[in-house]
Length: 433
Ligand code: ADP
Image (cartoon, rainbow, N blue to C red; front, side):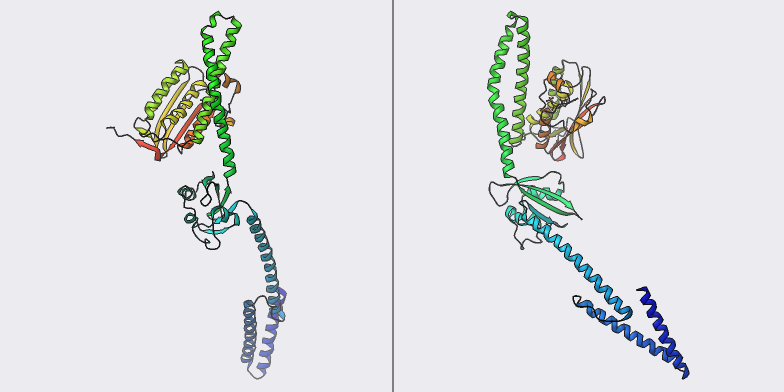
């Protein structure tokens, strides 16, 4: 191209000089040079016009031309062909992506930054009743009006999926999961959750039923063991030991059954909020007395509590969660340990902290502590009579109150278990109350 351009310039200079030379004979050098310049300008304008005309119908062959203009036309033509090939390949990929998304059983819905529907597959039409093309461009929250979905969509906290009944099919449950991409564009995945939910319900019912069925035989066994223990003095020493062990184990099984029943109640029932906001100060004071009894007055338990601070929630469930944390601080630390219980509020909500300066927990266990039956030290748990369900219960109670449990601990540093409740649950008593 550079070569052709140089040639074109030389060409122009040659013709200018020639015209000026010939014109000079008649003393008209300037006029002749101007005439040649005009000719060249007209020629370039003519080629430009052809170029513009061709640009309007790019599918046609480029105009024929020689020299630098021919090169320009050819280059543009080749570039265009290359771009067309590229576009064709991209379109093919897009078609395949759309085709495979259409074949998915899960609903896929693309939503733009304004929350309006951009594209969706057939499964989305079956699952939530979108209509193509009339719903195109409609806000998703006008089509899925369920307040819990609107709240989930607007709050933009998409770490967890949302499970809701289907808006169009009775008895069907759907799982919604949103992923953000681009500039606040969102991809909504909708999945039929009915079968999984049924399985989950079966699992919950099974645990609840087994626990319930075990309760009566266990009560009978424990009752008789207690009666026998009352007369154990007349038994040989080795029988006495056996009896003690049997009593210990039956008590442990009773705790297990109770904790399993508590957990399944938490999973299946609706939250029963007390009519009056829960008087957490009184609740903590009574748990403290129970914890001191459990420790045989060997631990020091101090309360630093905001007496005005109450919360809307279930008195029974909060007692269960808070006592689990305070009893754990007694069970898993040595006598003489200092346990601090704090109850306060700030702009984020209400917080309960149970802090001990006990042995602490290796951070590698922390993320698994709330799993059912997870224990840091299996051997020690047996001796403390723990079921491994305590923290799972706390986590569930918090979830039911839209709160969360957080754990900070390290070996040798003690532990801090905190329950955080949302600001919306707070009730602050006035001094006259
Ligand atoms: P459990 O019902 O057996 O007490 P949890 O779910 O309440 O079980 O606790 C799980 C594990 O967390 C316990 O086995 C124990 O190892 C550890 N843990 C809980 N609280 C404390 C604490 N304050 N200090 C040290 N370890 C603790």
